[in-house]
Length: 463
Image (cartoon, rainbow, N blue to C red; front, top):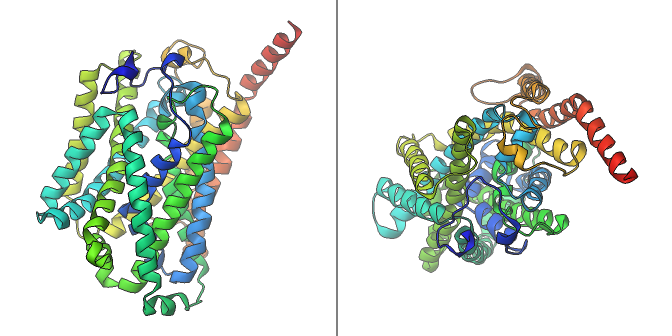
């Protein structure tokens, strides 16, 4: 059986009930560890850089994470119920071949987060081992690749260690920072600016929503009868608490450190740890290693799904798994080594860019699962191009396209500022429109499917 092997044997294929294991509580550690990363700290610093005070950055961080985390956590319940990776399930909405579109976009997410994680993880390795950041990035990529190859069970186990270490270290850094006299001065500034505040909420929501394409990958081995409330609840708690803590720490660090933090994020936190700087660096490395492994593992799932769509396979051989993960790591490393000094600005654009494209997908996926099909799927048909889900779903693709296009006038990024965003002083609300419009249109276009499902239920009740 697959569960007796050291290296995970399953890939995109369905997890049989006999191989299901684990507790939903483990999701708390996975998502807390993935979110208490140096990348989340850097994201928190953006709230202050964009014009918020340290005080007003805190509610913006909390609001964005709660709203975005709510929608993201809803995806987690799909894992135990269906037993397949998150993006395979997109075939039910977009069609067997139509799902390749969101898969390519998801792959961009994984590569982007992986690359940015290698830059920051390389800095931590450089500081800890006294090597160059480039060599540190290479070592970090090798570690991420190895953990992704070992797979699901080992990712969960490692996340327990990373979560506990990050929790202890972040608590210590908060205590240290709050006892600094300058912190009181930073928090006493009550100046409020609406546009940066709304943009900050969008950044936090973006952080949460970009986990959507792989959230169910880490719950798909749970027993099928795992309570939905437990799966959603533990995912939400770990993701929202972890990200909020890391981002608030980053906002305070940016307010206190200024240029000193922006030029050396990892070094600033290590110096803040004082005599415990090594422990801080280990926490940074473990937290970022968890996140990078999720990106590598999720990227592998996306590539495997795209390849099997074209070859009509239902699973990937273990040796091919190693090749795919290694190629993804190599691509992310190449991007990381080519990164410029303008890292923070580029990362802001990257987060907002992903938000424009992934929120419509998330809305369509959730509406289909909870409102249209109401958790009832033919898993075998997900692997059949001639099955009930078809090859392309024009309604889903149209809803997705409109969900992206409707956001254009509201976009606010360095490459384009929409007229309405400009009129609103730079406030960013396009992601809300993407959620509502794409989800609403998909529901409207799915009338035939809803009627068929209702008819089958009536027939089953009569029988």
